[in-house]
Length: 307
Length: 258
Image 1 (cartoon, chains in turn red, yellow):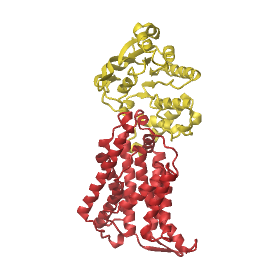
Image 2 (tube, rainbow over the protein chains, first blue to last red):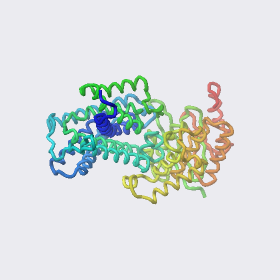
Image 3 (cartoon, one colour):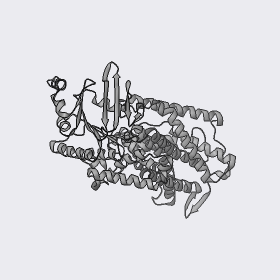
């Protein structure tokens, strides 16, 4: 049994925080989209994978600096998000009257169409790149060890920390200090109210998909390079974890999702002290079940006003 | 000289299945008018309203606003042409501050392209802020600009929604049953407020259930019954109109008067 303040434990906390930040980046995409459309985007995990593959292709092709790789992955992710919205969400969306806004059928249809896009995308990647782990050039890996006293960090930890904090800060700035952010919050609060004072809801929704997907794609490439594995099925596990974080956070609360994601990352990481690593996914599912039973509004949710 | 016609509705109809909710309605609103639209429950007021504001497409007929045919335009496009509305069941943004609620109106009216949405446009940012403060001052909510909208009283939320509409700098302001849920004192205050807006040159269409309010402040009243317009005249003339009396009194027996 390790002493609670030993280096190993501190190490696990640090690993857990970087894992949690990645979950947070993915969870934000889920949360933004849920907030604005009231639907779960089941293709979000594939955006993460697409980001990783886009970054890898750029590395293999041109070997640019890491910042360029991340920005490229974000751009491709944003474009993929816009395409996803066109393909799976817009054709089914009807904001024309009150009844359709509340329609369960519409929400369920979107759920299936996004799932369909997710499966097709994943299988296309398997077709073109095979289902195997991709070979990543050694120089691009973020596994360079940096010793800080008794702790062993990698440059991947630092990059994930830095990039996530910058992106989370940027997101808050965007939501609270720009007009696009104001529109996103307005549409999330009340679609019809926003439409009738001149807000173009379709454009606002597209912007939301682009932003959420860019963050998810950034997480994909960072994790791919940190763990050293990029493969078509890589989006599933973080997708599920991010979904859990969103539910724990109260479905449409970004701070709630971020805190829950960090909690989840740290719990998983620390739990490997006590249980075998193969069981660590139990933590996420366990927390999900506990949340749904005891905190149906989420840990940070306050009764969401329905349109 | 008659003032310029702002809104002209011609032979407008909308059917839902077999039900003709709005049936061949023609009407116009001139600049500077304060017009009331009344009718019993189910008369088609809301549908007419939705047809005008671009919410529902008409089955036939045209809506011309400021010389442009606007059927088929989306609500945000109609709004940008200068038509603002409030809602009977309020549609404010509860989780945003009072200030942000109103500034959405200014942002919506001024547009927010990629360039202006994220960066630059300092002059525009200042204009948005100025418009927002002006609208808040006008309805008397400037003192609570930093509050969450959800924390306002029901009466104040109504004014918040009006402020949001005013921030779009509308040419025509449509108020959908603003007196619903207000007590007599509040209704009287609202009447003074609407008259004030009108006195400042605002063109207002007031869709109302409260006959007293409409008759006391409007210059002209249109009456809808079963989807058709049955009267369009000064309040006194409308009140004496046998067709109106029948439409209202004929159903008064089995319906509670609101």
